[in-house]
Length: 327
Image 1 (cartoon, rainbow, N blue to C red):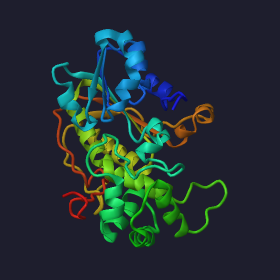
Image 2: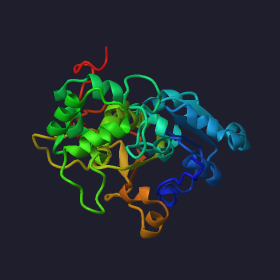
Image 3: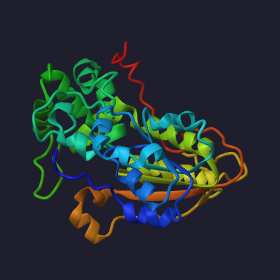
């Protein structure tokens, strides 16, 4: 917990959005890396949002240095348009999608399989936990979560093993159950439980639903010429951001039965980069987490904001209520 948190793709973001002025919103505050960089680069004000109440206590040492230029808000970036109301049209929105390395480092939060911890994984520390899914959900729902959110090909085998091993006590117990039911991993490859833990975390926090709501909210809150910059860490997130920007900028691919063509409206964004920006070798060496990061950006145009079709941006839909996790 004492190791510094390194913001991913910070320099590419600053290069993409320069010059920085006006009011910005950092929808995934975390350790404040993007927020501080925006303020230091010339932003008039930054509204810093995070669903984890613990992050603001950690910022107490430096946040007062920025006075009323920094506004801290506990909340979800899916509501950023409501949070930004009263501050005028935003000059920019930055989002770093995914779990914070600080959260992973806290065994008591239950995000990691490297140390024993409770089956929690909740970013906001409320609502259903990973324990609710692992120890209460039916086998079919668990398999769907692992396959859709973790792209785990052995999802049904793992789900069957989880149900048979109940009650699952903690993160190490869950990782052990998963590892025993998968082929032995080769040296240099990720731990066998990586995809399953990712899937459970995404499901518990409704991360893809939050991303869809955040993209739509950013479209509503950004002023004409405002910048949307989004960093993602796995293919599901990147696909959603890519398709959103394609459709909103008039660059959607031809329709097919899996991704119907969006209605031909006036473009709402101008795409800033066709291919995602990735970390260079120097950044990856300094921060291995950056290896999977992808940055996409777009500039808001004057067309009115619209709504999102979740299917068109490639978002899997799984209902925890239907599986009996939520009551």
